Image (tube, rainbow, N blue to C red; front, side):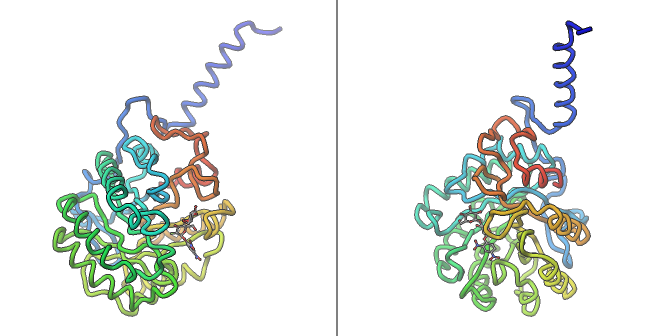
Length: 330
Ligand code: DCB
């Protein structure tokens, strides 16, 4: 016999199931901030190869990288960044492209977007990476002057802010050899340190930030640096983990400031099995990471579906395959 109350009971059951399985949706107006963020850890520094907090305890940062700030700043508001904190992220990376319509074509406008995004992450108790996102401009020396003046400005603004880490060149490639990166770093790092003497700075490595083994052969003469290694699970595997292992063994601190579950184009996959191997490697070595990318572009590395609205929290339904995978691992 059909129970007349069936629809109501069913709806109640469905609703409780949904709330149970989606714990991270923010109630409207609820403030979402990182649970293990800046209030808990304070200024960071590098000891040996490990990132540590003010008390000297190991800290691991996990979070999303934005896509290009010139295209996807709608996902860098307080609420949007807070929605990642609700899932356990304590880091957000702001990818400020230099070329491709980024900072170099609209310095005032993009700097303004960057500062709003940094302030948003700060309001959510998160660590935040200011990323000078070189890509088609593969040699960081190409825009050294612009970089120096940019970093002078932002490091003055955030001099006393323990939340901020500086990533001085995203992915050198082509003519961006380790020799060129070293000269560039020697021009930029002292400028940042003049304003913010104790901040952590991330340095890119040759071949789209893969050659940490090369950097390990001739590291820079400054404290509190980490060297970036980027991977895309669809094509970078055991051989790249070997390079990281080599660098760590030689005492070089490594930071995974960008990785994707996709191929290196941002598409293809999701490569779950390969991503699992990377996640266990990163856990084993207590490496910090940021995942590419927090946007709703139609590509498999994007964490958000087309219609996602990050302003009122994110349900599982608003996340892509990649987003669901990554958000469950913060
Ligand atoms: C890096 C870049 C990042 C790029 C992703 C995926 O590039 F840091 O900016 O993002 O990895 O390729 C992609 C976006 C696309 C966008 C494109 C250009 O996902 O939506 O259209 O940037 O702005 C890498 C990483 C690794 C390698 C090559 C590139 N690699 N690359 O190993 O060969 O050439 O972009």
